[in-house]
Length: 242
Image (cartoon, rainbow, N blue to C red):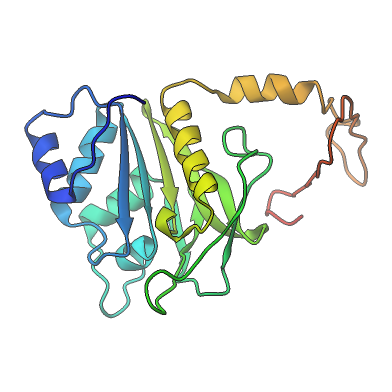
């Protein structure tokens, strides 16, 4: 990307409302650790961008807690909850803790599957709450905490001609700069159709053949070929159990 800028949320809202960003296809919206995570005008501006068929990445810890928990001190309402559930297609599970200190990619995901892993660090002076989230259809999980499929950290969704990515942890909390940059690049490439799930499927077809029998009950055979490096195959059931 050769043309970009960084602006505060208040200016982003003004720009959206005045049609300044109509030619900007990719918005990276960093909430970090802020309360309220979204003011009403900010949520409406993000929804307006998505409704126009453009793409947004949202990242920050406690977004889900602030919008969806209903706990004392949280700020969720119908406007922000609509963004969280109907646009980002996310479901808030838990506030998280310092135990969720590693971000790992879902290796089977067609966009982020080859992304690196990173330690999650406490950059807010003892306030470390990486949200544990889940997906609402048609979103799919992209990153986990400590490779635990029961503790999902991020998702992506393609819906109504827009693409959205949501991280329950702030990217500034990832200690490995190369992983941060890789996430941004993969997101940008996906937003701008420089990579696609179809391309990934074609590449994987050279490695992993069709399993048989299919459907299977007690066992199945997965043919593998062209293995040139160490790889891990993770098989999960419909409930996400490995």
